[in-house]
Length: 384
Image (cartoon, rainbow, N blue to C red; front, side, top):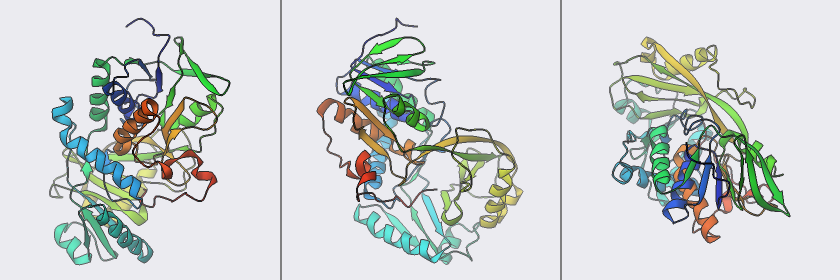
């Protein structure tokens, strides 16, 4: 273990995809006097427990742009970072049961195509022809984008962190933030369980814990953690591969292939906010019942394991990216509402530009903190 670094130009709080990305882009721009604090191990919490989806099928233009930047990065990631991230462009298939949902999907398609997203509109028959294992009688239709898919979140985060470390960033694992020093409305430093660090800049990318970190600096960050559970089957050969990430939108259910098995999950709208990541095996019954209704062949599947992760939800399902009010030198990227993995790399780049240049070329209006006090708030509707 290296000597404790008690000063830094930038301290990053959180060692998931956001923290690793911010550290990488800062170092890439020449800012190497950076300390990244992670209370556990890198990419072990929310990032490591993510399903790893990456899609362009959003209802908000800003989210489409973030995904497109990540897609470009993922395509060159193995060469640029010497890391295999398990990037599978198997596509995302969104299914709509309700008429209102279907109308929104069609509106979304017009928007997505205006940003050159190659999304297809499919009727019941077309869906059944391409994925005959699906039950389609209750569907209004679906949308499919072949460029979408999934990658391994842990590998992406570690690839970014490893390059950042080689470039001079100091990464401190098992190091928990205990307080933030603010004097005269300016960041002065941080205290941790291992010692203090004097710094003028703190970046809050602590995911589900970002609200607690913000309070340490006297800022109210309107985000809350919610558990999301996923389950994986044993080897399952009754569905031909490749299997897209299939999202049954009106019941918040999804499944995709995971190695030789099937990964599936479903949101529970009745579950309150918490930091719990325990697996509720009673909830598995609801997940499997929904799965069998959409793909009856899944009745043959056997569940091998399950886990719980955390979404960080904002009031409009869009992230908060940028400087936080009232405290100079305090930045955040939080509240991605389930899209943190896929939007982490561009969020890190944007934060690095704000810190080093005082501005960014990305329009952060829809992601600004003050939108909650104005009429600029636009809800992201493609959230599960």
